[in-house]
View 1: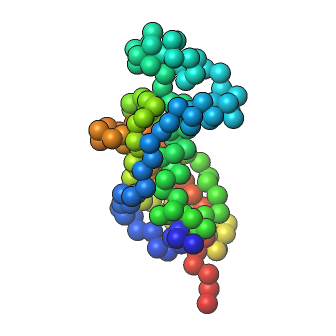
View 2: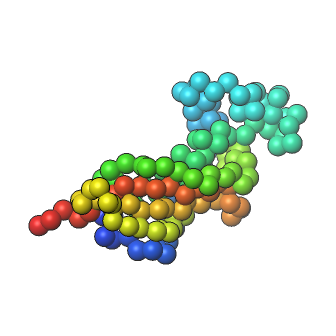
View 3: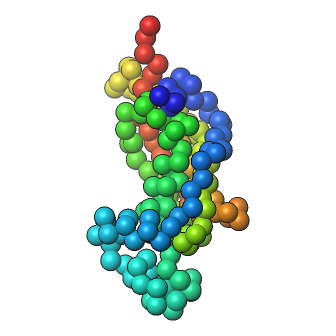
Length: 151
């Protein structure tokens, strides 16, 4: 287990996640199929060519999932109870097939849980960047985190 317990997070702590991922056409098509999303902007190259992007763009929910997912090993693997919500979601630039995504997480806030003495609440800020260093996605995520087990 590589995730951190509630007590181990510090406000202002920044994680520059080493794991990166190049997004493929298959990622995009499979995600659209699994979520029943027939949007031609993601699936139809001829349609995409006629848009301001000049090609299909990757499904934004896949992008958000990837940006957050890359953070899990460094932050919450095995120590999270669950997500409580996501806010301030923004997609700054489109992601295209072949873009390589990296993520950064900052701890914005943390507090004890009022209803669960064995848990705390952490506010994560996630940012995703493409291979050119352009911010492609942003969100704040509130997680309910385990406290360190008592000895």
